[in-house]
Length: 252
Image (cartoon, one colour):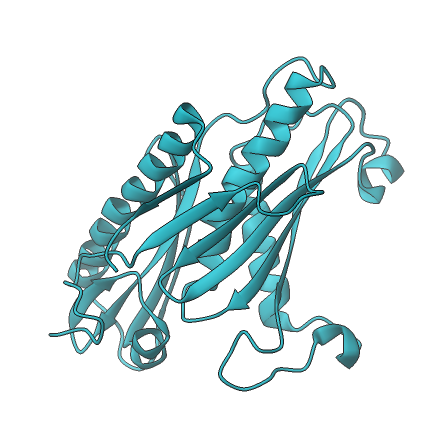
């Protein structure tokens, strides 16, 4: 099956990450996955979140996330959730996913009694916003933690592994990697996969839109996701090891 952008079923879109994108944040990136663009910032707060202070949890930090889409990140203007007076269920689910994914790669005790807030703001959406947010947010988080160590605010570097994510799906019976919006919106199965650098799964979210899918379909989609995430982790590692401000992988 031919994809609208000419990619093969196992090919990623062009993924570009730009570091140090926001002046004031301790860590920040702009990640572009095809036409999906997300700004991720990591902000260090020198106190625990309220729930930890209330429970008198000592010598332990926290990593949490917020996610939002700008009004014209989509083809038609969306109302800001703040003006509606409540956060939608989709937004809550995505920001919890981002927070869980990042915490899986952090030694929270090494943060001591600090909170790192990760904000992921979608400026342009074309499918895969949550997976792009996780992949980009990891670099922002890494930079914020590196800064804490360099400034001698903490003794030990708290990040224990990489985290990256991608989407896969089943479209007219064919497994495909890294879905854009038109593919995602018509997919028979839509799946988001989060992994660490050791090849272990953090979260798998898969849904059949109409007909159930087989174990064989699942395995094929998961294999595509694993290969795609390994590419993303190699990109992250290049940026961290070589100190690159910008790097890319994939297909234009």
